[in-house]
Amino acid sequence: MFVTLRDETGAPLNFVGMALGWDPAQRRRFGGRVQNIDLNAAALLFSGADIVDVVYHEQLSSRDGSVRHHGDSVTGEGTGDVEVITVDLTRMASQVTTVIFLVTSYGGQTFEQIDNAFCRLFDGASSTEIARYNLDRGEHTGFVMGRLFTADAEWHYEPIGAAIFAGHPVEAVTQVSQFLV
Figure 1 (tube, rainbow, N blue to C red):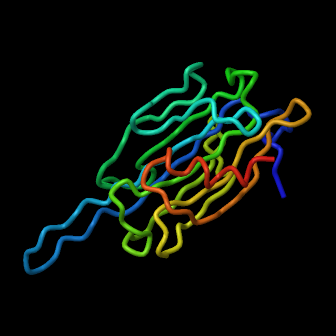
Figure 2: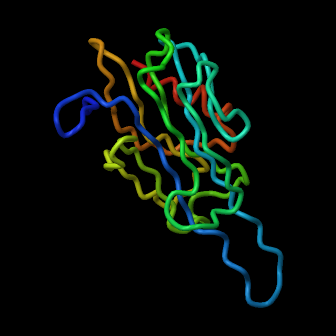
C-alpha cells in the first residue's frame, strides 16, 4: 500500500524529508570504555533496477543537488531529529524512478543495543509527519524505511519497514533490490 505525496489542499508535495534520531550510548558506572553509537541516514537513488546515486554521511548531496544530507552525527547527541535528508522532488533527475531510505549502524551495533531509535518521513514545507518508525530492537544492523517512487507523473511513498544487515549504505544495495518494482 502506498501514499500519493500530496499536501492538505491536494497539491503535489515538492519537498520531503527523512529524519533519524537515537539516544547516545550510556556511560558505564564502573569504568569501561563506551563505544559511540553511530547510526546513518541514507538515500539510495535508482533508475529502474540500477543504482545511480547515493546520499549519506560521506556524500552529502546527489549529483543533481535534489537530495541532501544535512550533517552526520556520530553519537546521537541532541534531541529529536539528529540526521536529516531532504528531497526536492521538483529537481529530481528524470531518470530517477525510486529513492529508498534506510538506516545503517556504522559502528556495527545491533539495534538491540540502541535506545529510542526512530526514523520518519515528513512534508518538507509544513513539517507534517507522513510516516514514523520506532526502530525495534533486534539483531540487525540496518533498516529499510520505505521508498519514494514515481508513477503516472506523481511521487508516492510506500512503507517497507524491513530489517537488514548493513553497516554502510553500499552494503545495503543488493539487499534492497527486492523492493524495486
